[in-house]
Length: 403
Ligand SMILES: *Cc1c(COP(=O)(O)O)cnc(C)c1O
Ligand SMILES: [Zn+2]
Image 1 (cartoon, rainbow, N blue to C red):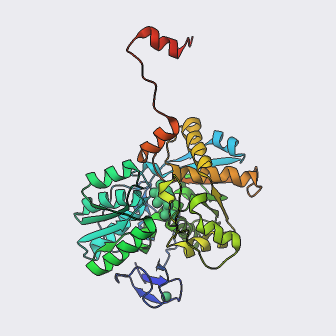
Image 2 (cartoon, helix red, strand yellow):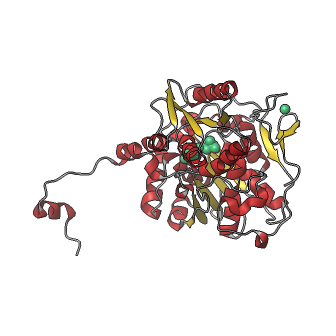
């Protein structure tokens, strides 16, 4: 693949693709992987639906990636949710079906492959949970040492369980995610550990394949793409994917990106509402959707660009709206998602109510993670099951006649 560079979005400087940098050494701006987009048709792609089907859009050298067959997740049509939200069509891109149960796997297959390519022996991340679950699995697969820095007491049980079982060295810090991320950025530079948070542009190269899959599964570019925003890597990556498919000649349109944040952790939405050019961090972000409990998202310039240049939408949803959407997704359509994922769906109902989406709209919601990631939230929301003696009469009374 030719002409692969890291390009600074702040000052336009370019760097070699093997430089181990996470932001622009000159201006501190975010980096983006830039390469010559192939002119290609869908017919020329081969392999099963999944990240590596799009090899010609993934500018790394390795012939043998570190992979667990990530991507290729279902796109479910959800007519009952569409009716509830009052839009014409609502689809769920179910990222819970990835190997470790979240979209992070799309980024980690790329990121860890790059780490191996660069000769790294150890990788690290700060995480609200899913990044660490994913990185620990891919690091294990690649035989790398993995360090995971977590905000103490704020990581869902399922995610913590994964990091522990995959053999990561897990360190909890007394602070929130933003503080954990600052720490691990310092640590990785000081100790020569490869950093795999979403500030690492290689991860976003993997995550952009979600856009490619949606175009292939739907047979077109949807009108709207609704994405929950935390550190804002995913919405940025997906937007890059849609742009590249257009540039390659595969698709002719672009979707409107809809970024949804939790009300208690919504610095990007606030910035867009204010029409401001600078992000004011939320010092104490709070939401039960722990995956998006982030007050100072590093990728905000990319997300703001995605929303503004796609003529997109932005809004917040409350924890109550998140819980109610999570239950409806599970009960009406049989799809189990974690709270952050439900924000994407809750946001659609809100946009339709506010007239930002019409009754004619078609929306794809990115449901980012699996229901089982956060069993404690489920119990607190649904309650524990009733317990009875093992007695037929007693259980019959409770169930009632169903004839
Ligand atoms: C990481 C994550 C998000 C947020 O994605 P960003 O790229 O940080 O915006 C949302 N939902 C789930 C389940 C996640 O794991
Ligand atoms: Zn720069």
